[in-house]
Image (cartoon, rainbow, N blue to C red):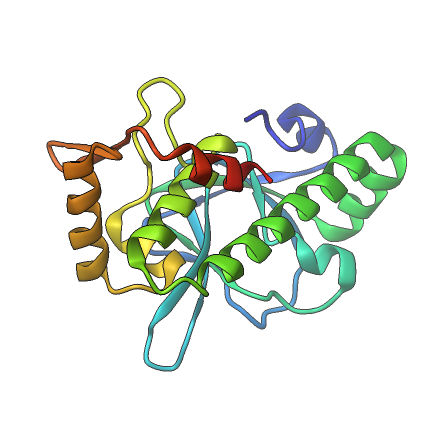
Length: 213
């Protein structure tokens, strides 16, 4: 997907680059928000962690996407933690300048409203899917949703860019359960597993249709 905000525009407003190593935390849940963040390269995951370290994964951010944007609009602390999954480069803009940017570019403000609606819709979708007891149904629905929305899926080869652990953290399943379920889905031809990589196969039409609604 294209960059949420043109990088050259961000630079003219004083945005700066920040390199982060794999495993680095960009911000913690509960921290005060001072910057708008946009991923330039690499991969960032946005998640909540409980006291035992168990993770609930909200999304894996891809280059060109912003993350941690909610506090920029409501002034509350960060609702989740952002962690670099690999060496990454982000560009950040101070929140006061970001607000000025939105005032001067209403089309960008509209894009953000659309983005937040899409992300909120995804949360409703996942909450609904968690009501299903069958692990395979959760996984099928998640994969179909990602395919329909061209997110975390290679548009050229159909490879799913999420690890099995990340899928487990998004669906509230054990990783062992995800591995077994995906192996069975491979046997049914719903996905393809080649050299440990997972590729989208022929998901049932009802699943794909549900993800588009």
